[in-house]
Amino acid sequence: MIKVIGSGRYGEVKKAHYKGDRIVAVKSFFTKDEESWKNETRIYQTWMLNHENILRKFTHYSLSHMITNHEQFEDYITKFILVTDFHELGSLYEYLQRKVSLGVLEALNLINFSAACGLEHLHSRVRGTGKAMKPSIAHRDIKLKNILVKREGVCCISDFGLAVRYYVNSIKPIKIEVGTKRYMAPEILSGKLNPRCFYDFLMADIYSFSLVIWEI
Image (cartoon, rainbow, N blue to C red; front, side, top):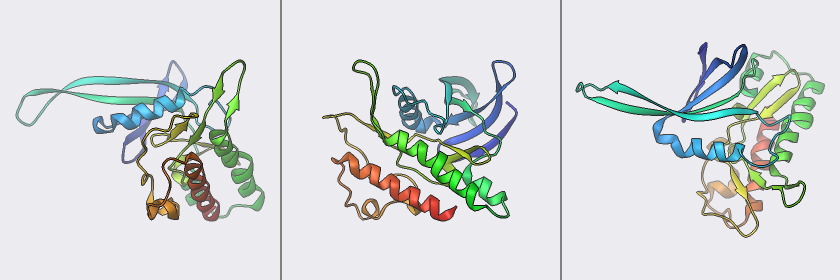
């Protein structure tokens, strides 16, 4: 590990070396957030998810190690690990904080030609050969901090711990009010979003993305 580069409600992210000289981001989840880790790894296993504007994953695993608690008893603690691409420029939130000003062309590139493309791919059903198909995916926590800047004018969407996939005739019970309140659509805050209508979750993502555009 090189250094801690971020932390959040699920754990922390470290910059690290992976298989030699490759620099990666290692996201470790708290034990209590195992379900979030499992969900994010399931999303990354989705057929045909790979896209220029979706954060790339390399691997995931769980890691147990022994600790001695305050009563001198030995306990085992488990960390859940997700290894992804590392992007030096950080999140779009951090990037905008450092920028004195953002030109119109760069703003349009960030919005129209990268972040929007990533969200569009996430939301789309993509048919492959035979019966292979990428399902529609709702992110459910779109915000500046969950969009990473790969290079000047190019972004990718990250953090799929709350994301849900849609398969025809298969809508599992979903907790409605999740994500960051500041970015939540009115129908989520009011409890009026229909959990049986997947399209509503996609529209809630669009509302959140519109706030990202406003902030840019």
